[in-house]
Image (cartoon, rainbow, N blue to C red):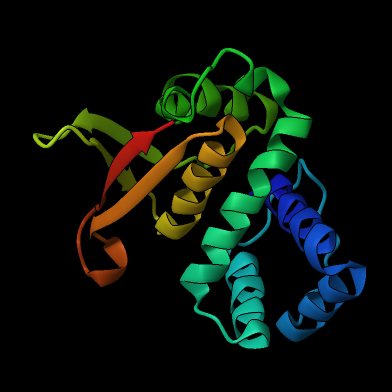
Length: 179
């Protein structure tokens, strides 16, 4: 996983809980925390940090990942405003992830293993999202979607229809957007 993800996690933790909380998380996870944005690090480091946060806070790892995704959007906006500027809504922003955002991420961070999303309309009018990644971090994606809604002043209801964590080959979400 690219170091920028660890930098975002550190910034989100420090912003909400202070630097001692980040240092405590690193200690609980048995990590040294020297992450550079362009470096590549084992996916297991994120898992260890999320597990440590889950234990420290007494919440599920899914809740930690959702919190991280939601908290990361303002930080991403500060760093990469150009990804947000062309969009007037969270729905437009989220739908651009494969075509605009991830190709740019790959340019900035060579070797980045971005997840793949497939967007489609559901029969009931909701936006369907299929998520595939060997990292199986659909709850992080869920948090990013909520964070995007917060950023653009939109509301989104997210229903998980199927999940790789429950044995499905792909995660399927249904999104209902409103302003």
